[in-house]
Image 1 (tube, one colour):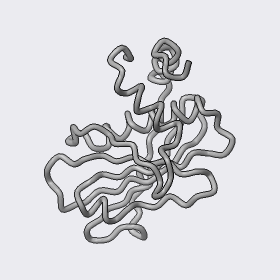
Image 2 (tube, rainbow, N blue to C red):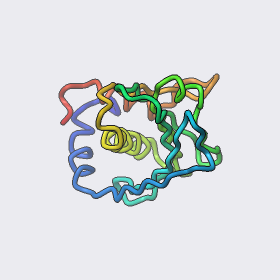
Image 3 (tube, rainbow, N blue to C red):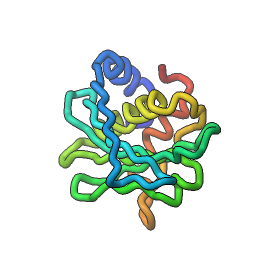
Image 4 (cartoon, helix red, strand yellow):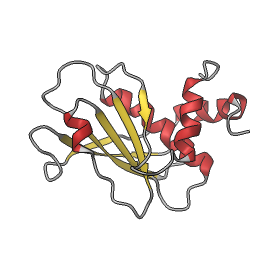
Length: 153
């Protein structure tokens, strides 16, 4: 059921009608010369506050790959300097506690939409990455499959 495009179609259309109120804050305490980090805060489809980090290399001028990870509510989001200094834009979303799987998938898809707004010059596909040594979380697996289905709006 969670991989059925018809299950998600209406939910995604409703999500597009809800403003996300994106706020980007520079994080010089997390940045370095080869890694610029911003904190992003925004609203989910159900008005829950979400936040995460976006890291990019300020020295890279060409289109960059985008890499996305999620961390749990009790984990500290961190940007992989090696990935960013290698040319990737890294997005780390912190999932609030007690979120249902359906809401987590919607949060990931919303973050993907905003990531492409934040890096309009990057026409690369977003690559979903697991935490080191962990399998890909369900919400990223489902979001990856949904983004690959051409029948979704």
